[in-house]
Amino acid sequence: MAFKKKVSLKDIAQAVGVSSALVSMVLNGKAKQYGIGEEATRKVLAKAKELNYQPNIMARGLRSGKSHLLGLVVADISNPFFAILAREIERAASERGYTVIYGSSDEQPGHLCTLMNTLANQGVDGIIVVPCENSEDLISDLYLQKYAMVLVDRFFPNINTLSVSLDNAKACRDVTQHLLNQGFKRITFVSYESELYHTTERIRGYREAMQEAGLGQNVNVLELPQEKYHEMMLQVFEDNQINKNSDALIFSTNSLTIQGLYVLNQLKIRIPEDVAVFGFDGGDVFHLYSPAISYVKQPVEEMGRKAVTILIDQLESDEPQEIKRYELKPELVITESSLKK
Picture 1 (cartoon, helix red, strand yellow):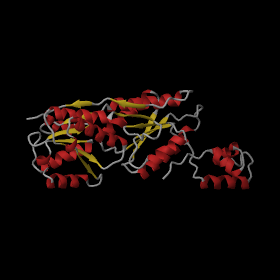
Picture 2 (picture 1 turned 135 degrees about the horizontal axis):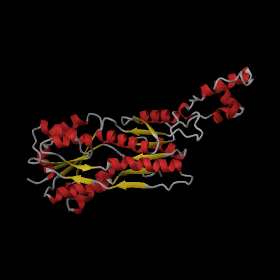
Picture 3 (picture 1 turned 30 degrees about the vertical axis):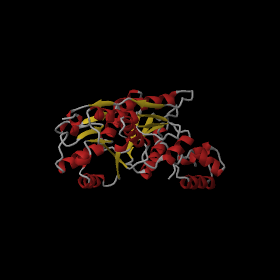
Picture 4 (picture 1 turned 45 degrees about the horizontal axis):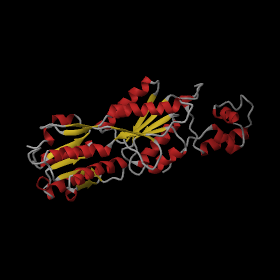
């Protein structure tokens, strides 16, 4: 599914063979007032319907031609990380005089495309996107159409877009090194089955740290399907006696960490006595769990503000902006869950 560029009055005018001014008069219900014939009116209305023209209500009457609206699409608004990101983006945009319209793709490329077209039809000046799996063609379409856009949290390395993300390889390299320093050697990395760059970078960071420690033969990446991953994790942990084969677990996302804690509790596996645990993103459940869970703290507030700043700077500058990838530094929050007993 490709991104559809918003149909303009000029597009309709060119298709019918009339002026944009005439099209505007017809679509605003002023054909009779300005003496426009019935045949011309019929053709304009038919072509507007055929092209699925959507009037930019929000931007009407603005002398600058700008709506001061930004679009935001996150991957999963139920994930606390994305909820905080959306809140910070909204705050930062408000400080610059912009309003944010946002939605959640639910990690579905088709839904992401629908949202993007809806936002375009609402007349947003630019968009901030957390891309999902299999959305590379859509992002490429936006890039080729020179749409004002910033990717946040995730990006595609072969598409030259502005982006703000975590240094994911460093984050997981640092986590693995911390566990190695504690004396853990049978470290399992738990991830989704995904080709998204941030996921593969997290796996790369883990692998590099294990190999540098001379433990390349002990690299164990458990990749779970994103559908029914709780059931799969329970089955794998139970069948493989995870606490016998691993002395430490690294969960690569917030959701996987939470589900992992449920599964470990269900199997009566103690943390850190039976297996050490290191998670991602944090959250209330991490602190309420006993013991509190170590995690990679992403600079989510900085990430959101940076995305807004570079998008609005792009919109308000008369000069083309240099394309940059901004990688932010991770912070490790270390608790008893990842310390050797």
